[in-house]
Image (cartoon, rainbow, N blue to C red; front, side, top):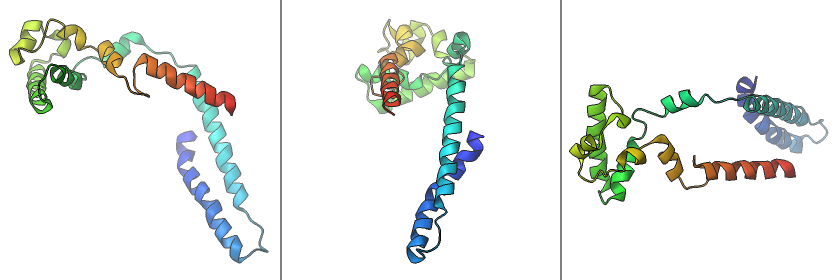
Amino acid sequence: MCVLRVGGLGGHRQQPDAAEEESRSARARPRQDREALFDAEDTWVACLAATTSVVAGLRLNAPATARAASGLLLATDVADYLVARGVPFREAHEIVGAIVRRLLKEHRSFDSLSVQEWREHSPLFGDDVRSAISAAASVERKQTPQSTNPRAVAAALDEMRDWLART
């Protein structure tokens, strides 16, 4: 219901504005804009209740999540690793592109590379490359608000709980 109805909420939101404009020229006519507004609110409340139920019952499959986070999804992290070691981003991008092309051809992923294989592409890959290029390390490196970093997620949840308590 939510997916089907949300598109109509924008129209309901604009309808009161149009009705108000019309009512200026015809003050005697009863305003019917409230019906659309109440309908929009009812839809919003129903969607919020449904979403709350879905999220409350959500259980993550950790092994499936880990598999989804593997492969070549960390290409940007590889480039960032090189940039942190002084490689200009454009050059880091080219190096990572070569690594990705190789891995695609060989049906492999970043975690299958040995340190020596990393160094075939750049001598700047250190002994820490295998631990630095992981889903957990990627998430931990994100430091901006609303990022995937566990502390940022906890802060966002606290902020939302505070907001819900105030409303």
